[in-house]
Image (cartoon, rainbow, N blue to C red; front, side):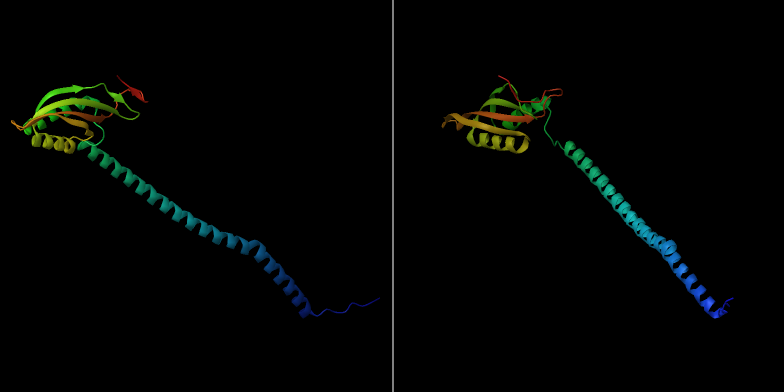
Length: 193
């Protein structure tokens, strides 16, 4: 019978230690190293998520601030008369015109509103006026009307008659006033008259 040679214990331990080391390295690489890398990436992803959440909250806060500023500006504009006037306020414009005319020594002889012209987002009211007074008074009156009355402008005027002896003249002119459409008015272009 053949005899088995006696194996040196040091060699067995060396082979066992090598196998153990190979299994330990493979186990580390498969079971520990990859999850550690995934854990680091997860930490980086969480940090990126936190940054995005902070940036999003800053953007949201900025949007709310801008919205508040816009609301405040809109309220301020409305309080000082911004935006198109209501169509019902045309009478105030006409009253203001007569006050301005009187302040410059001009008398309003004819004041005739024409039918309203509806536009898509506003309406136009034309007023036909005939005024009598000194030329410089008429000139100052027209300038003051243009400067003071928002959304109103003189579209046409002509000097009908001038009187050199009394230093007066008569002008025939048109004023256009733009106003917001009446509540419930249909959108679209309609021409009255």
